[in-house]
Length: 361
Image (spheres, rainbow, N blue to C red):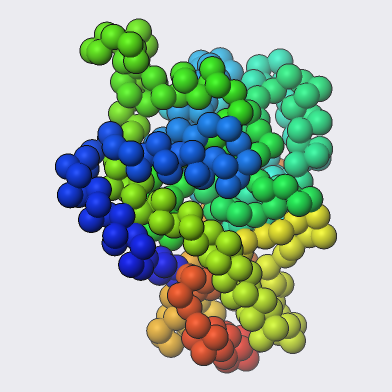
């Protein structure tokens, strides 16, 4: 689905980190990765973490979200978003998807904002930006914190501004299939120095930075290793090329599949620059997707289904009316979209998909 782009630059940095002896959660690559990634996105402070879920939990904890609070979250996303809210003792409140671009729908937020609502987590799902202006307007009117989950959207832009630069805290994942990867890993970005300091303390067991082994807070072990950060530093140097490659892959798929009347292709709104984390498509009817995916599997093509709406999953099951997400989920799946996929492979995938559609309809 998404073989990472790991080359000589990463190898050189890893060897340097290993030879230095700084292979755990201290070492110069960590601070360098935090600084360079924050600069790329357009934020002042970076706090590297062990993974993207840890970044979300750390952000919520630093903002003081806890028991009795509510947090607005999209239902059509990976379950880590709801889990991170639950870890704090707060309650996730599920918001439907926008039918045109599949991210959280701002128009569904207003009626679900209560006096207990303290924050919004928005997710730039599958690499497409959310519509940030109405989200930020709602947040200002109700004095809500905003957290951007940018795990799938490194380098994406909303009206010419990189996602991850709009919120109180933005959170990133660097899992192996992400555009920038450190194998595992994540990061929180913020412009607020006090928040950055608090997150660094919470990340390291709540230890007082000026008094070793004195713990003022109940914290977490959410630290990134210097070896992981060494990979990340090399990855940042490739960012523009990685984003351009993702967009080229999407453009090629779009050209090859443009005449397939049974498909809805990955969207890109006029105000958005998507990075097409995966190339995401919809089939026309719910009962077709599994047949098409099975056909592709038999042809040696790996695919991934869309996320289940979180409100339909056992830990969070609620009888809610969120029709857009419930219609998108069973119709959607993702095609191989890694930065190393070449045009010939894309053509093979598209041909297999066209054949699957012909044999199914």
